[in-house]
Length: 387
Image 1 (cartoon, rainbow, N blue to C red):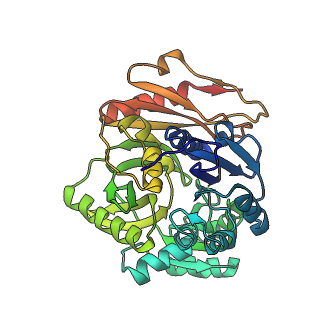
Image 2 (image 1 turned 90 degrees about the horizontal axis):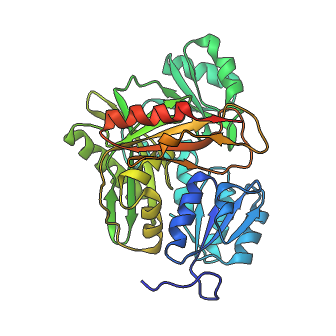
């Protein structure tokens, strides 16, 4: 591998389409290798904007705007980091010779729950919960009756739990329909899923490039309304079940192709493995790897993109807690206890320019035995306040 210098004619250049807290960490890891970074988002001073070489604010669902910034910057690699992006712009960028990570078709399949479910079940024969797609309130009522209650209702395109709800009876359907409008992305079509009374759920970070496929230890996580509250690594599970999850993750990511890290989510019930979702980029639950691994998910993502070897060392078990704002502010201030910063714990502040109630603003990270780490990570989060 030959490394270059940022801001020079021959610089290796990564463009992030989406510049939140995950993109910020990708930016830091890329710059550690002398890679120039262009951060693009829909709002000014997004977290990755604060550390990138160049920052742009555009409507990322506007094909023309996306292609204009791509042509202006001429990136070596384009990394989609959110769902709300013009897919047509990514296909057109590939036609023009740009390298989309992992590739435009993989982004198309994975950023839309309909495409990835159909691909997983019909093309690969992967086991999932029962599901149907609907576009009308009446269709939602009918599909829910067929799937049965409780059922999970989500927009086909959204993230961080936005627009997701659980309907426990017919009386909840209208409310779920209204909640779905809060989607980050496209709420014109919804997926109605069978509610799997799972024993636990995991994220299996799967990294691939031409050097091979590598898995991180399984990550357990606690979610509320589709957005994660706490994650830990490793999740204790039967080796045979983990092997089955790895087989499915490899089959799906091989089917999608390309380079990069994939956050593959599974439900586990009685040692049966159900494929749930997949993100073709670093995963929010995977922020725990900032403390548990020598190469975090962000470092592995950059290595995969550049075609580098994917080896890493595990430091130990740990946990990550998410702090969500309790106030609305145009200049948020976080108050963090001093003892959050110790030999085995620390906090990462995202630097978001505005806080809204429920918006993720920071994380706590703890290296310890899993249960102790989970407890301490939660304690730290509960001690943080914002104003």
